[in-house]
Length: 190
Image 1 (cartoon, rainbow, N blue to C red):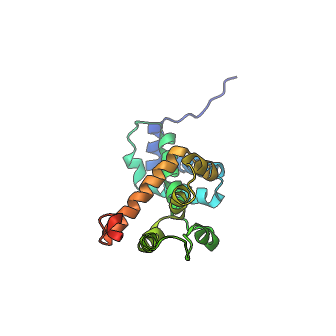
Image 2 (cartoon, helix red, strand yellow; image 1 turned 90 degrees about the vertical axis):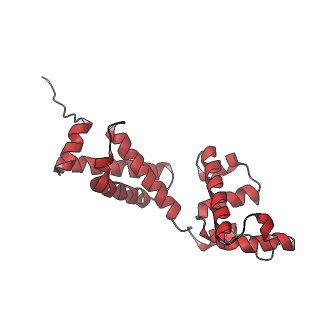
Image 3 (spheres, one colour; image 1 turned 45 degrees about the vertical axis):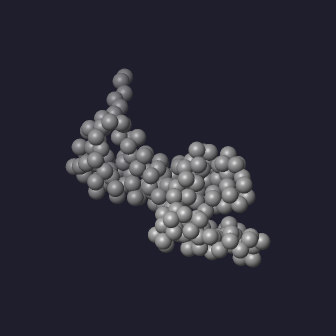
């Protein structure tokens, strides 16, 4: 008695998807949904965030992703990368969970900062408001609370190197915002 398995190659799967084969489309959706759900669960995020990432990845694959795939990696890996990118895009776009988080992370209004530093913070505030909540949290923890990147990574359940990357990008966003406001450096604020 031999069992026959239906193993599909990447080329055959792509061809079937382009031909709108319902089984191939169903398999693609199940794979994307599983990736999104497991990623949300692993990162301790709501399941609907994983679902939204899977839907966006599905739409991207059905519109243009199938034609951009170049067979340099397994198709499942290509799809997983798209889900991960969509997941992080949605996570970074999410508003903070509550107003208390923003209040908690914002510098105090009546701060004991010297007047020059207070002026710098006032000028930076519009730029800070443009940052995603997580980026501002990382900068706040690094520079105000003086926590180490490893401590922040443990709190956020992400890699230490990713904390460094997010802090680097957030600093550049602040710098670009200041340049757009006409400042060349922090010295110009003083």
